[in-house]
Length: 230
Image (cartoon, rainbow, N blue to C red):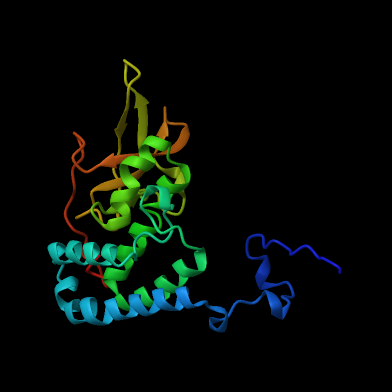
């Protein structure tokens, strides 16, 4: 029996190379668990989110937070979080299936996908053990809502152009951050912010900042053209 090594896609290479049919994943390949999670997500959006679209678009943050809690009860926030930290620890395809159905929820979907992706995964992938134990179980249920503070008034996609600076305190116990972030999805109702800064103005890294941290202030809500409920 000949065994061939499957080529690992690099960047956008999959767009230009020949792809064997057996490597293409289609909905027909979904297993029962994946289909079930997709069904649960679709029913949640249709029954709980779509009827309240107008309230969400008018920035009823209390409602948004309540919907987060319900999504957490259904396991829709914890697919990518390891079981040892309160998550479901299911495969990436299940996460994709949930996202596909969730996006029908408009603004609310953007808030959820921000929370489950860039608001949680930095801790799941790169946090230390204490950080994972402290935050991931709460993020998995929606008891805490995450956000991702990268963009600044003078930088966005140019991440390394950020001006926010972190300096170690004189006693060496914590970092002092100074800077301004802008266009931060979920910031108005989030409990923690994955915030990026340059240590000593040079070494780029991320910090977990709780909303009640001294010195953290929120500016006025941005006037957006669409997805106003984020």
